[in-house]
Length: 276
Image (cartoon, rainbow, N blue to C red):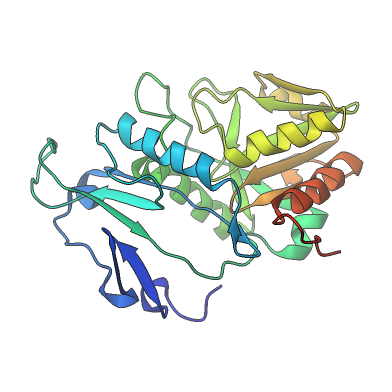
């Protein structure tokens, strides 16, 4: 947790090409992005002053904007949204805004629980059919059901929630991809109605470098009994062990621990050593 609310932190924010005082980086209440959710964003982590896979994040940001039918006029960004020139569903003439903010961000989950395994609830809302929403975009509007689901989970004592897709198959968590382990093999849902996360891709690469088979397939909730380990991945979550999803139980083991260590090593800038 930060000591101050995010809108009161010290420093400057890069806003439409200029560095402005933190508190002045605001948007109007009639901005299209606020009312109609036409915002895209990226959350990136820097380790030792170097952003991990910055290029991949920037490419995804630009693609997210394209999927929402706007062109981001910059190549590196964290947040973009439509402005206030037009107010209505149509927004062709709205200016595209871009802001980049940086701050100290601790682990998304309690550090001790990340190793022991966090507890997940089963979300009520489901990831939408790709025919009904631009599910490959990291768009603000797609996170509304994630926020609701995470709030409900936290009120029940869980750290997060696992979401199913529109057909009742395992999808992801509210802001992280999910993996399961059975007999030394990793199983993960096909990312066709949710983001194929950059950390997800990294974890798959690291596992395969270790000679661990990774199977991307449809997974039904009824199968969760047979998995021994579970972990989630994301820029915020990094690689985090899971001990419980609703009635299903898992024990963080060798593969999860190995990938956590490998990811920690991978994100360190070249020439530095990962902390023990």
